[in-house]
Every structure is written in C-alpha cells, then in structure tokens.
Length: 201
Length: 78
Image (tube, rainbow over all chains, first blue to last red):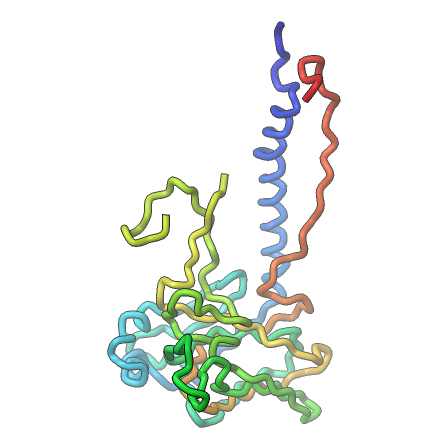
C-alpha cells in the first residue's frame, strides 16, 4: 500500500502548527507593537532625579551594591512599555522618595494608566510571626501616587511593599501581587543546559 | 516544543512595573504627585498609557477552529 505524501491528518496538523500559524502570530505581534507604540508617552524625569548610584548604595547598604549597579538605564522597553530611564553611574538617575513630596507635571495629557518603573529597599518577612505585636511589612505603605486633574480633583493610590513594588533582588516566591518584574519569562526546553548546578532540573 | 520557562524574577537588579489605573481617563492630568510615607521608594521611569486596556495584561484568549480534510482509507478506525 502506498501513502500519498502530506495527506494524513497528522501531516496536515504538523504543517498547520508549524508554518502558517507562527507566521500569522508573528505578523499579528508586529502589528500590535506598531499600534501600541502610539499609545505610550514616556515622561522625562531627569529634572526630578535626586540620587546617583553611590548615594543609592549608601541608602540601601553596601550589600546591595552589585544588584543596584545592574539596574537598567537609558532608553528601555519593558514588556512593551517604553521608559526614559536615567543614565546611571555617578549622574543623578533615580528619584528617591522617603518622606517628601515630588510632583511631576503631565502637560494636560489624558491617560488610561500611569506606568511606573520602580523598586524599594529590601526587607525580609518572617514566615511565622514571633508574636502578635510583630509588624508585618508585607503591604506596608511606602508612598502615595496622586493623580492631579486640571479641575483640581485628585485620585490617590497607595504604593505598598509586595503589592505595587518590591526590592531589586527577592527571595523565592516573594513576587509582587500587582506589579511585574521588568524581565519577561522566556521559553526553554527540558534539555537546555542549567546555568548553575543548583538550578531546578 | 516549549516545555518550560525561565523565570527572570530572581536574577537581581529587577525593576518592578506597576500600571496605576486612572479612574477618569477622559479628564486631563496636570501632574503626578508622589508622596513618600515610610521606607525608601525609588522611581526609575514614568510612562503614560493612552489605551483603556491594562498595558501589562495579556490579551484575552482567542479560539480557533480548524476544519480537517476527510481521512484517507488508511486512517479508518483512528
């Protein structure tokens, strides 16, 4: 018995799943990217930046130096959102908020969302409280973000630990509930080599 | 075939992205006021998103229907 080439359901499905659908997805993705680029307005913050890397290391502690030095700088696109970040190094490149107020003019723009790229100092939450009086830092309010409208009205949103922000380096499972890390997840194969011997796999 | 993902959350030097919803997107904004409360918060960048959908959420799932050709005689019983 002879089989005609490419006429079985398996062949058909293999062809559909590898060729046209991927091309379709790629085409769709590029169209989406072009369309979404018009939807973003990065805001220049250089006049508001008040700390350089050495100052930041002083505030966060020397043990955070390596992690802080690797924080992205310059013009970046995180998960499709463009940001104008500071140049880093010895130049003031970050807005450090402690117990003061910073106001960024928005030039009468309209927006559905205001996207912030941010991090905070590290904390270690105990999984079991020592006693009932032990303060849980998870959800602690670090700052308020206030939208100010042209009619003078305001809308306040809290920025809380482990919700809207966390530290540049985190322990396993200590992700944010309402924010995402700037690095997206990447696909890998089961037989990809491990980066180090202690990795899962 | 993808069988796993590499999670970049634990590589250190992470910047956290938060999309703050504006309940009145039709109103013009004059400013974003950031009011420090406790601890150290560091803002690296700020971008306005003019759409109404969440900029960090994937689009809703799409459903595709594929009509297969009739099976050949050799495939009977599959």
